Length: 303
View (tube, rainbow, N blue to C red):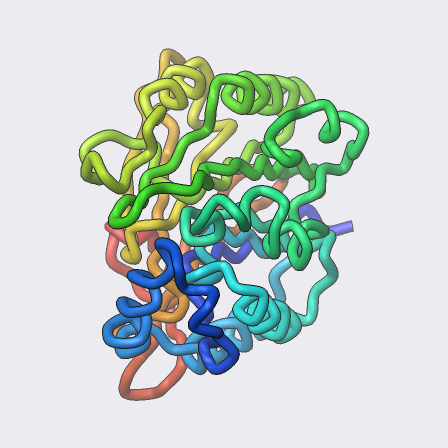
């Protein structure tokens, strides 16, 4: 059996489907979101580009795909059906795809947590130990999936927020469970890959769109060594490189990936592991000249 393991990171796919939207369902924050989608976001994001990204990633033969939130815009059922069509392009089972939610997936209170995300995508965020998962009060988050020598810890920062607000929150119970999952993973000699929508490092978000308890998450993670864990996030629609200061030998790497549907700069990230240790971190970006995703090599982006 090969000790090589390849993970593709997607985020902020923002698949849209507005043909079936009824005006009667827009009497909420969704009305403002619909206007933004109709007159701005649809000019910036493309379902076709996202489909191209899925096909390109599938051609790289990943062992696992991690998607860190904002799969939709307004959290309509019709958008999630578009997401399922997109996932089919990957040609992988639900055990090989892990999904964490973002703020757009919890757009209004009536859809979160028991709404279309859970209905359509629940099987992509189930823990290996479903009994342990049912003991939490966070709709099963964080979920924990061990794949070979890699432990995937999927966190939820999704919370319904007021208009013009895009913040996220983990909460004390989820933070405690994240700490437990990392600690147990390291004891089992697993490399812990933490997937989260909002960036946890300081100084990269505003008060209205950041992770409310980011400091608490950093306090939890700083107890661990960066040789044994790292964080992948989205939300910012661009590639980012950061870190969390560790009390151990090496700081924890934090990598952000841009939107997979952004017409101007769609991207996804490919992580290669050998015997449970990171051996490659490569960003793939859409080439306007070739209409395909190609690897980039700038240091900021991990190449």
